Image (tube, rainbow, N blue to C red; front, side, top):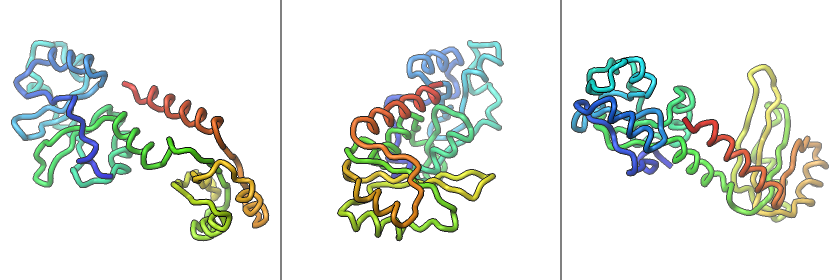
Amino acid sequence: MIASSLITDTIPPVFVNESCEKALIWMDEFKVAHLPVVDGTEYVGLVSDDLIFDSNDDTAPVGSLNLISHRPFVFEHQHVYEVMKLMADLNVSVIPVLDKNENYIGLTTTHKVMSALTSMAYAEQAGAVIVVEMNENDYSMAHLGQLIEGNNTKILSSYVTSSSDSTQIEVTLKLNRKDIGGVLQTLYRFEYNVKETYAGNKYEEDMQDRYDGLLKYLDF
């Protein structure tokens, strides 16, 4: 999934000659803290509510603000993971999407990106989740997949988390079945450390709580 498929048509950019007050009204209406500033199809920069408040002049045109150092964007061909990383690093609620000639073609939001990631991870599809902890040198998705598929179970999605101060990693696997007794027995037999398991409604409720919590955290 790439940036161009994440563009939302519901939030417009602000034109350079439009007032800061109008930008603030739109931010409030669309529940975001940032908006792209454009001059025709040229992307000028990303204005924030804090930047406007610091200017102390709501009537001034947005183009009068110093946006030189506020020009983050992604190209339309960039992967959703790159989009999410940039938005998280910069702590922005929207990110402009540009074509290869750096013309503005739209924007995406944290909510849009998170919905896309949720869809990619099969989070809404019924099935169990297991979290396996291991040394990073022992990690082999091929071996895990072989053991799991040997129990007539498929891996729908996976991701790995690690810590900079540890050689241990956690591999989270979303499976296509809720009954994973056979899978767990096999993993235990091969001395895998299954740290957590989620199945059925408990998993779905937990994932919904985590997703809602993340969206609340990202809701500027």
